[in-house]
Amino acid sequence: MLSDASGQKRRAVRAIPFTAVAVQDGFWSPRMETNRTVTIPFALRKCEETGRIDNFAKAGRLMPGAFAGRYYDDSDVFKVIEGAAYSLANHPDEKLDRWLDEVIEKIAAAQEPDGYLYTNRTIDPNNVQPQAGPARWSNLKASHELYNVGHLYEAAVAHFRATSKRSLLDVALKNAELIAREFGPEARHDPPGHQEIEIGLARLYDVTGDRRFLELSRFFLDQRGRRREHRPSYGTYAQDHKPVTEQDEVVGHAVRALYMYCGMADVAALTGEDALRRPLDALWEDMVGRKLALTGGVGARKDGESFGNPYEQPNATSYNETCAAIANVFWQHRMFLLSGTEGGGDARYLDVLERTLYNGLLAGVSLSGDRFFYVNPLASDGVTPFNYGGEVTRAPWFACSCCPVNVARFLASLGGYIYAGRAGEASVNLFVSGRGEVDVPEVGRVVLRQETRYPWDGQVRITVEPPRDDATFALRVRVPGWAQGRPVPGDLYRYVHADVPAVALRVNGAGIDLAMEKGMAVLRRAWRRGDCVELALPMLVRRVVAHEKVKENAGHVALERGPIVYCAEAGDNPGVDLANLTLPDAAAITAEHRPNLLGGVTVLGCGDAGLTAIPYYAWSHRGAGAMAVWLKRS
Image (cartoon, rainbow, N blue to C red; front, side):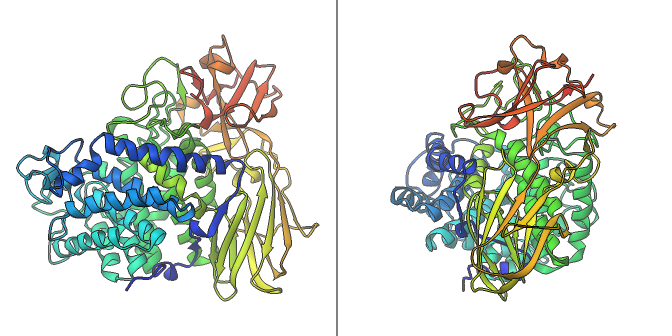
């Protein structure tokens, strides 16, 4: 029996489905529309052109031919399906719906009778790529057999919820039944080399209520760091150096790690186990306190796409994969939901989420929606290639195209991150114009309407529509850390000037004192339809410096305004050597909104220093050129 929110009922703080949110926002709506009309169709075409979809047809004997591409390419198709399903949920499209039906038919045909699905082996079992191993599950360190189907499970749940069709969900459940037979305490104990199936299994549990899937997710987590005679350790690269309950430092491949932390957070939230919560807290403190780029990017090293050492924050060589930024948003959101087990969710996780969203993540896709950064450095000379494939700017596709398809699925579901609900409370997590329906247990469905020009303006107006007049509940409104004089939780970065202008809060025009809990302004009262909450966040230009142990940025400063990190780009600063440009502390900086530049941006200017700065996410749209986030301070 299927349930639309079986797992959700077990979470203290519940995410609001993106289908219950209508985004009508000057900043995000154009990007989401571009994602729907350009990025998703573009990714679909690329999956067709590169043979990714044909691989399923070949495996299903619907067409002849050898496997094309790489052994993990099945996952790209699943991620595009997930994004397309999210798009369908809010924008019915018969053509896209038919396309999905056709691709799902090929996927179903490719599935072997016992549920196994891995086109690289099924097409020709005697001629697989070396990473796949000679037999099923024989090289899980590299094969991505379990990684691929984890994305299948996520896509299947998304498709089922968007269309009520079981076609892909039945494929996923058949595969999951196979995995449950093949792996477990009395069967195989090998974990995947690339984490993801843990998330997918939790999603299957959410939609089916079948506890076997949740237990299997926990089982895979428990196998990491366990020595077995038949299996060599995957090492720190794949977070297999210690049992997950003993890990306290983020190490190795950033995306793998963050997907694992997401799985841990899901299982912890659904089971209430502190054994997983404790290491998550330590891992979060380590990453945010020592290994987070100012843009929210993670994974400083190209070598192993890894976190690197504590305080290792290079600029020109910083890796910061777009997929890692997306995975970071996934994890921060889960940590926020998980933190609600001790009361309302903690806004510090949302602060990191927002920083990553507006900067490290958004830079990964062009305004046109069809060019991408795999790598997101914090400086460039405009000549030295840094992007995957040897590019010095965004590229339309990659041989390993996990980032473009990840962008496609994430942006389509953005609405799901804006609000949350728990018993007696509704929370506003992000400031995005539009309408959200928040299910508040014991109260009913509360409609929240936001009006704002965020991130360019700090004025936010929230109209509350309770299910009945005088419904009593708490409205929690996030007050961002940047508005409280704190760029990030911890001391990895700080503002040069410690002054903190007052944040103003009004209800129906009357000013009220801020009653803060975990970074949220909390308004507990009996609400009437049309009650209006107004939040005023001071939008100062802030200078940021890094911890003294971040050696590369010693003596340097960066600029922020609101949630936006800024950079200097050669095109706006002709004839200026950005590597040696000096921005003195006393130099005055102005902010000017330019609606016709780069889709509409607020630009920072400093005449004394001869500097013009644009949002980091918007760089590299006007040809290759030098760029710098960190500037000399004196």
